Image 1 (cartoon, rainbow, N blue to C red):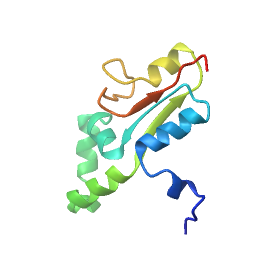
Image 2 (cartoon, helix red, strand yellow):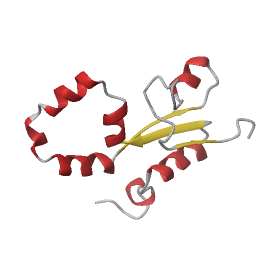
Image 3 (cartoon, one colour):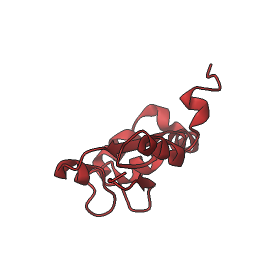
Length: 109
């Protein structure tokens, strides 16, 4: 059972999780809930295969569970690959859309 000091109790939203990562020293953090990741990061073929799983009989329940968890990528380096990997929009290597949550801090701080 989670106590009051545990991360489960203190970090209740994607925005809080991103803020925690930036507060710990990461220059940029981007993320989305797992339902958004399913819709945007997975290919059509991967979604088709996932949809064939037996446990997906109740799509609304599965969607609710997926919206409860998040997928987050953070970086603390200025290497080109890290800049591309931790990006959103058309240039995102992961397929993260601009409308998904993102947080960054001034790299000079």
